[in-house]
Length: 137
Image (cartoon, rainbow, N blue to C red; front, side, top):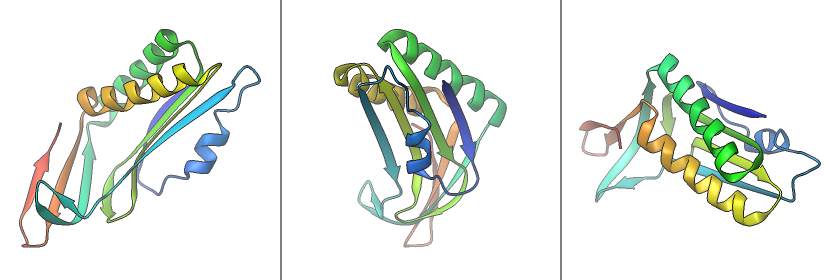
C-alpha cells in the first residue's frame, strides 16, 4: 500500500501509522515535520503552504513507489499539509513499514528528502517583523 496525499486539514499521525500495518512488517518508522518558531535567525509566526496539486500528487506517488521497490517496503505513506499552519502544527508526515529496521529507517529518510527536493510545494514564512517570504527547497 502506497499513498501520497495533500491535506488542508490536520494530519492524524496515529491513524496514518495504523494504515501501515502488514503481517510481513517487522519495523515501522515515521517522521513528523512540525512548524517551528524560527528559521535562518528570524522569528516565524506562521507558514502558508501551496502546492501544484496534480503534479505534487503524481510526483509524491512516484517517490513512494520508487522507495517501495528500492528498500523492499511493505507499505509507505506520506501526507503534506496545505494552507495556513501555526507554530507546532504538523506540516508533513512520512511513514514506512518494512521487514527490518535498517530498510525502514533508510526509506523514511530517503522519502522525506525526495519530497523536499522534487514535490512542488512552496511555503510562505510569515515573520515577527511583519515581512514574509516564499521558500521552496
